[in-house]
Length: 94
Image 1 (cartoon, rainbow, N blue to C red):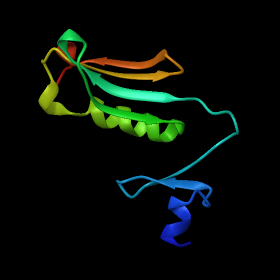
Image 2 (image 1 turned 60 degrees about the vertical axis):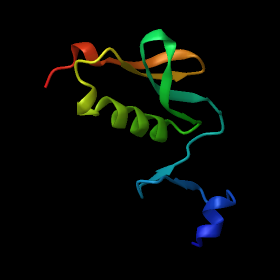
Image 3 (image 1 turned 90 degrees about the vertical axis):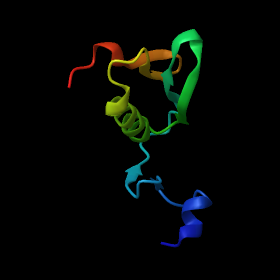
């Protein structure tokens, strides 16, 4: 499979920057949003995708950021505006 096929949407799988591949399932599109929320409502490290596996990967990546433990920040994953996962770094354990 050529790299061009991936970028032109001709492939049944989606390649992400980590080099892993995720299979796109079903025909129902749902929007996932994954991000860090800081005091004052500031948002960073935002990912938006319609692929559940990519969303889970992005949330796990944020949740595992050890340098944020104990800080006033949280990681959130939503699907169509509804919370799916939430991780509060203030209460994270080593």
